[in-house]
Image (cartoon, rainbow, N blue to C red):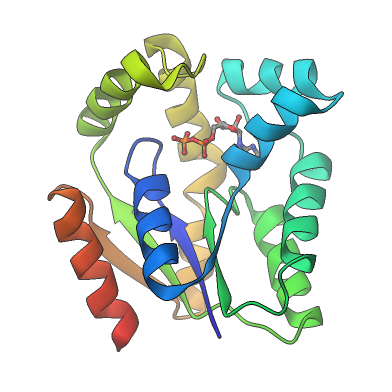
Length: 187
Ligand code: ADP
């Protein structure tokens, strides 16, 4: 069993790396952003979710936590999880600890993908040309970074104290970053 969180600012490459690592290690990739976008497309809560996403704010915990818990519960027989974009605040982190504990699981590492804001913004704007995501525009990106600073960054301390935090340089090429991550996970 291997359970990891992939952490980092918007645009650092969390989703890309999570997908590659999940394939390589046969882990279940749980992206709260993807789950929300699916719900947005299919569920009744679409308008509500889009409002938060387009404002660059966190979608309320009550909704996000429930979605992630469901995804975990459906896959408890699998070799492990990689959480991408989740948790994003302290409440979500504490909830994740509790849910994992209940399933007799634990986190093994929190990978912090480091990238400076300017580079991350450049990447998101480039992605925006093809992603079709309504939150990949300059104004929303600014708000997403602010949310990250205020709500999400404090989690680094939470995980550092649990000795789970590993910093990864997010600047190199996709395959170079994957290689670094795999090296760390093999230890
Ligand atoms: P990125 O990490 O590039 O910003 P995501 O797809 O992870 O992209 O997130 C897009 C948006 O979805 C966020 O700005 C936020 O509104 C919402 N979101 C994603 N994950 C969470 C979460 N764990 N809690 C609350 N809102 C979330």
